[in-house]
Image (cartoon, rainbow over all chains, first blue to last red):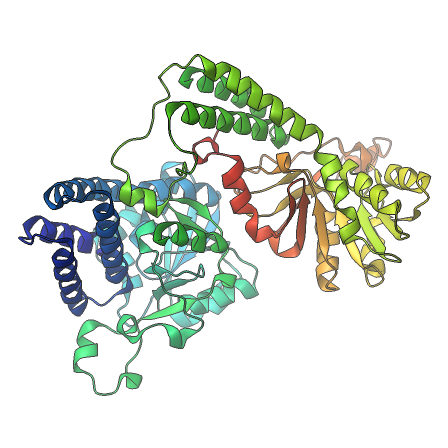
Amino acid sequence: DVASAVAAIRALLGFLKQDRGETIQGLRSSLLAAINTLSRVDSSVAVSSGGELFLRFISLTSLEYSDYSKCKEIMIERGEIFLRKVSLSRNKIAKLCHPFVRDGARILTHAYSRVVLRVLEAAVESKKRFSVYVTESQPDQAGQVLINLQKMAKALRKLNIPVTVILDAAVGYIMEKVDLVLVGAEGVVESGGIINKIGTNQIAVCAKAQNKPFYVVAESFKFVRLFPLNQQDVPDKFKYKADTLKTSQNLTEEHPWIDYTSPSLITLLFTDLGVLTPSAVSDELIKLYL
Amino acid sequence: SGELMDLIRTEGQRMTAAQPSETTVGNMVRRVLKVIREEYGRLHGRSEESDQQESLHKLLTSGGLNEDFSTPYPPLRANVIEAINELLIELEGTTDNIAMQALEHIHSNEVIMTIGYSRTVEAFLKEAARKRKFQVIVAECAPFCQGHEMAVRLSKENIETTVMSDAAIFAVMSRVNKVIIGTKTILANGALIAVSGTHTLALAAKHHSTPLIVCAPMFKLSPQFPNEEDSFHKFVSPQEVLPFTEGEILAKINVHCPVFDYVPPELITLFISNIGGNAPSYIYRLMSELYHPDDYEL
């Protein structure tokens, strides 16, 4: 139920606690090795951004204290605080985003996003009635997950939200009926665009063509220091699963799992740092990596 | 000062609830709250640089909670009053500041279009008229027809003015070089709440690739987003649209007379305010300078 970036950071924090090294340099290199191992198992954008954030966190803290053992104590303490803050971020986002779901709205969403589900829950709690269209989201039918199994899907039905599953190909057909599009993101890039499950770019283009608002909900630890200009620029290690990267002969024959949506197609981003226009995202990233 | 802020916040909530479409009231309350926070922070010993906003950086480095505003400081009151006086002086000078920028934007022999009556735009055009010769077309902005008053005032300054009806906006747009308008409110995503008819004007300008310039002082910038709580909408008596003398028809139809229009940020080229010219995508940055995120919801 936890975002993969948060799980990665938790793992790294545990690793930090057990580390026997005596220097910052040693710590950094062992952390880099740990992050590499993590990405070899799950090569998604989220794990990479979580890892980078953690490394940055270490560097910033180490700048303030020169004594290593004191430094390590502070790091562990701050790490715990960070994890706690981050667990509240979904609720913050839900609070910001649910006023945008009007009464009687028809929402289109894509694949399986826990943040989107939390937002919809918050909208139901504020007594709004709306219906949801979900794309089937091949190749793993993540959309179906919302209907068939999983406590989240059943929870949607329990909250009496009428849900309809549509084919990925039917997005253009259904777009005239929807009022807004709401998706999550696996990563938010420097330009303000997002990296998300394959098919998101199509939905964004259709939404723009029909003048429907396209909202993205993402926590701030998903901000990543990439600046892709087109689909090719997204690194291969994010596009394919870790197993595929290891075993396949020719990557061009594999189907990518993610795509890049450019910021001109996105109306607003809801994050735990507030409601941002895509141009504000790079500002936030600069503030961190200054 | 925590108590002071709570007092101000309650008063602010009461005032905004009375007339939600007057967003400047709420904006000013937020400015004052930010002033108090800053003065408190300065006395408390925090440096000016330290970020009051949420940021990734803050997430990573902050050790614990933020301040609770409970330490009393005697000089705080005097400092706050002084800062508020500075704010008042700034507010009084806004129209002049905006008008001073007029010469950079208006050139000789241009045709400018505007809609309705805006004091800021009037001052802007008058200032430019002192040195340049240009024409103005005013859309009358039914049903209140404030465009007429604007035209009278402009022609007193010897500016060649034409009044036309709102229906003719698109027809005339091909001859217009620039569109300059005022607004009621600027929203956090760079959108406008302006007089009814402005959206049509903006769409026509977009179609002809005519730049749309909005002259508005910074106190009109409101940290709200356009969402379901459309409390910006104000409807007045439909008497202006269809007079009560047409009694028979009135029984059979619904008549609305909205006062305001929403203009999305993509249609706007430039905002001219007392701090200079800015693009709509930059509005979020101005907001973070004027208001504190905790005050966005009064």
